[in-house]
Amino acid sequence: MDPSGAVVISGIDKKLSLKQRVADMLPDGGNLNLCLTCGSCSSGCPASGIGDMDPRKFLRMALLGMEEAIAASPWVWFCSMCQRCLHACPMKINIPQLVFYGRQQVPREKRPKGILASCDLALKHDTCSAMGASEEDFRFVVEDVLAEVRETQPEFKEMQAPIDKREAILFVNQNSREPVTEPDEMVPLWKILHRAGADWTYGSKGWAGENYCMFIADEQNWERIVRTKARAVDDLGCQVWLNTE
Amino acid sequence: MDSIFNYYAKWIRNGDLKVSADWNKDLKLKFTLHDPCQTVRKSYGDPIAEEMRYVLKKVVGEENFVEMHPNRSNNYCCGGGGGSLQSGFVSERREYGKLKMEQIQATGATYCVAPCHNCHSQIHDLSEHYKTGVHTVHLWTLICLSLGCLGENERTYLGPELKEVGL
Ligand code: SF4
Ligand code: SF4
Image (cartoon, rainbow over all chains, first blue to last red; front, side, top):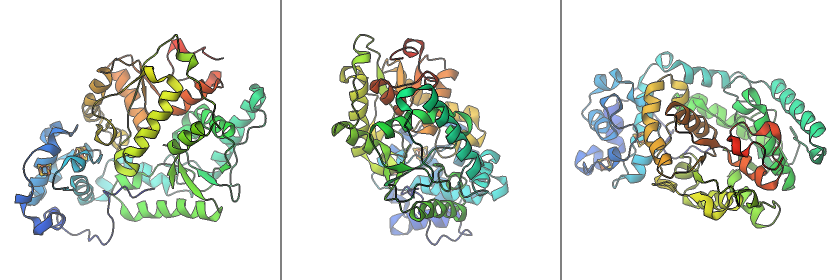
């Protein structure tokens, strides 16, 4: 996955306080005067006001060292780290990154169970599926759905949905929800690739598009998942890692 | 590393995908587009937003595309990102998404194209929760519809007026 700019992961010391982090982040050693208090961040933030918090307030509380008050609020989980505030901020202050650090301040086992489970499940197999689908599960559902389409839709009787095709140009990923909960939704994608004459493949390893370890703010496992996926693309000798969402 | 949206656009431009918006000529169904934060603001920027619009206009007809505001890199997040769909804070997630829902409703469109899985799930949920009657669709569904090859079982997210079109 693209590290998405906001989530810079190099050399972070987990013990740092939010205050220290925000000071490091702000130019000039955390001079709050650099924040113009213009409110551009908050006015365009859909999470403003939820749980009586907004991005500007969050930034200020962090800088003032109000660690406990921040820890008492679940707002870091309401913010979607969408970066709209960063986009709007004249000083380019990276509030979503601060939110990411805020999530890290929460002990791992106390972070929201749903996101945590999605991260942990993705670590179970090299598929990186946050729904825990294995290599075999994926192959079974793809082959099953393909066979049905080839049989019932004659114009697609030659269609392929290759898995582990070496040296294919495109390595296509897929959100787990399709193979696991709505497999028919994979078919339009295959049809487009088929009609376009694309040279593509899924990988039995690394096919899953999602990575919840990033959202649970588990950098180590986030990186592990990205590396597993990248290795799957390289091992098959594919040229392009193609995101389908 | 690339996004399939760039490829959709390329394939339509070079004629590999022969899409047509004729199916919507008389129906005149209106479509708006949600720019996923992850794809647009956080990864590829406005150029990919243009490619998505190019594709969408080709498949639904230029006159049937309605822009939401703000858009592209400035778009509001739907509220499904950052793990929100998994975090268990359901009412907060829906409160977050209210802005998105209003933004969609202001376009008057019957369909919102959400070309990212998280966004699709969130906008679909918002639509049901706030009872807006707006359908949430993937881009691949519409491309196949415009290629005349969308199968019967591939129409889960289409409204009744499109259940039979091109079958
Ligand atoms: S990244 Fe968080 S704080 Fe910033 S605009 Fe998005 S939801 Fe609001
Ligand atoms: S947009 Fe930037 S400068 Fe303006 S209040 Fe927010 S953080 Fe401060």
